[in-house]
Amino acid sequence: MILRLSLDLPEDAAYVRTTRLLSRCLLDDLKVDRTTTDDVETIVAELCSNVVRHAKSKETHFLVTLEYFKPQVVITVTDAGEGFAPTDVLPVGTTRPDFGGGERLGGWGLTLLEGLSDKIDYTANVPHGTTVRVEKTLYYETEGAADEAAERDTDSGGVVEASRD
Image 1 (cartoon, helix red, strand yellow):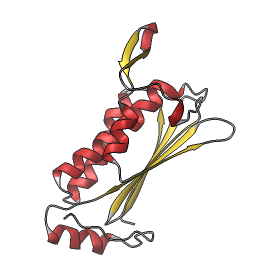
Image 2 (tube, one colour):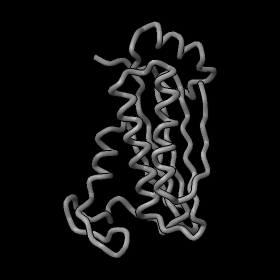
Image 3 (tube, rainbow, N blue to C red):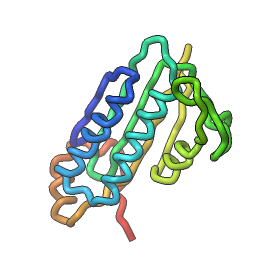
């Protein structure tokens, strides 16, 4: 592993931007290519936004962990909210409750996450809450940047190398 960044955050939309930018910072330092960096930043923002919008936990905090390996980043978000099953989410483009008692069209978040991620797992937490774990392959700007990341990676966690065709 190159780095593990763990954050214990309030369920407040102001922290979505902070977390998104922190995720981008190391990827930029590792010279991960722009498309991959944008994807990871979007994944982190969507996961955090989902907690802020939907979790409704009594503890009002959630955990974000970003684990950077040379071949991939693993993003885990855990909340203590009401929990959900992906199969129970309303269809894309349907009306749902919004902040302040209003309504909005929604449902694109999980589809977006699934499209940007290599692997995504949803786990119900006992007695309440959800953990979402996302894996995303990292592609580098240059072979030299990939080599440097490999040198920094002390434990790839059993992850297999990937290359872009």
